[in-house]
Image (cartoon, rainbow, N blue to C red):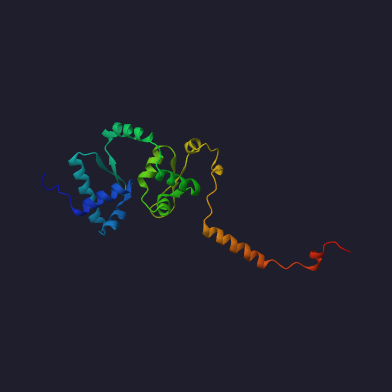
Length: 204
């Protein structure tokens, strides 16, 4: 159909919303695309119209001043079936890494997990939440109000733990060992020298 070719801004908005995987404020979209709010709103409105005309699997939802790219409701049953099959697959090494970061440092944000692992973890976190191993614990009172995540009771059952206190200790790094040795040496230097009375004991 004529007039439905996607512009650069509309394509950028679609890519950003798909990658975000959660509601995103219009102001953040505008900032990311380096345009003003009016231009961002026009791009999102055009994107929404094109998605509706296209009739594909995605639609654009608006929640006050935020937007989210979602699957259309009519595909809910097939999505649930696919996710049910996916939930029975074994955990990958990457999934274990994400679980370890959350288990030892919870509650944590997605940004913290990605900082530790050095890669995008959005889909991995979503998959672990679907498996019931991770859960949302609310939002931080910071700009953007990022979600924070923690482990679940199902996580404890799967790993035969009664509480998080039973997690094995983290290995000590060489840097931590060196810092501990320096701290011990400093304490020895700062200790007062032994007096004759303490050295001689109770001898009369």
